[in-house]
Image 1 (tube, protein in one colour):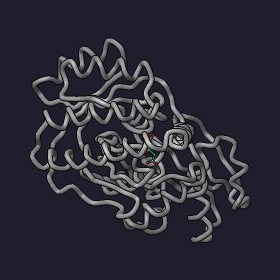
Image 2: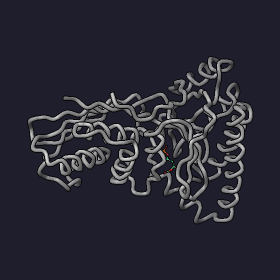
Image 3: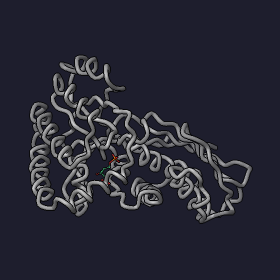
Image 4: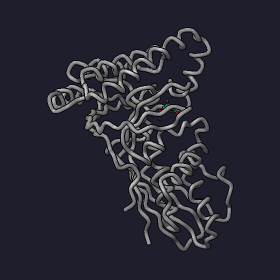
Amino acid sequence: MKSIASAPGKIILFGEHFVVYGMKAVLCSIDKRITATSQFIDEKVIRVRSSLGESEISIDSSNNLEKVQQKFMKPFFYIAQKAVKENSIKNGIELVLESEIPPGVGLGSSSAACVAATASVNGLFCKLSKNEVVKIAVQAERTIFEQNSGADSSVSTFGGLVSYDLKNGFENISSRNDLSFIISNSAQVHNTQDVVRQVKNFKEKNDELFNKLCKLEIDIVDDAMLSLKDNDLNKLGSLMLKNHDLLKQIGISTEKIDLLVQEAKKTAYGAKITGAGGGGCIISLIDDSNSEDTLNNLRKISDCFVTKIDYSGLRYS
Ligand code: PMV
């Protein structure tokens, strides 16, 4: 018996980094997924396979995640070990992850993998609700990224376009916008934790400036919520450029990222970093009128693809 589940990646439209300090962010899941397939195996091991590598630990060595050599694999062993313990099984589990989402560039691939893996592994015993999945997925991700806000896993599980802040959690944005974006990959792999730490240092050294930027971010997000309601692409695009400028000021852009944004804004409604920055991807807001021109332009200097909002979130197959 195989248990299969898939979960989407995400982009942050507005508010990354500022969300860590209590501001509101706007994010959505995208139509690129990670699929997790689990099955029981005779060997008494937990085996995880993905395009990034293969690793296994004995089911008897429970609790010892330190034995896992490749750090990015830890959450999957956490998920499988928890399921093995709770269901006291005698045989092992193999988990295979297949991804359409480029890793390490701010598109939520690790959260999507944790969500899909949690649903898939537990589906071998009893299908979990989305609320149960997201709880375990966040715990799993915290084995490698303690300060994780949980935003990525939640949007991956429930799908759609949402706002999020630390105090109030998630709120669905009810206007069902059919927005399209081009995602351009700078090919500079970032480490979210390092970039978050870098911003913390920036804040400590420039407290007054950071507070000023937080206020500007609040205005941008408020305006963005109204523009989403009106589906005003021109306004949304210009707010994205403003948001990019704030991210530049806190020091998380790179020369390559700025070049991509410069090129994108020649034809797109707007463009900005998405996610932690320090490399990673930019998003450009487009529609049918400017999609081809923007793609042609950006393809000369980056790998890119068109994406839309995914409204389904976690899916069992
Ligand atoms: O690299 P990403 O897309 O996972 O970016 C994380 C977003 C931050 O706001 C920088 C951190 C967070 O936990 O919200």
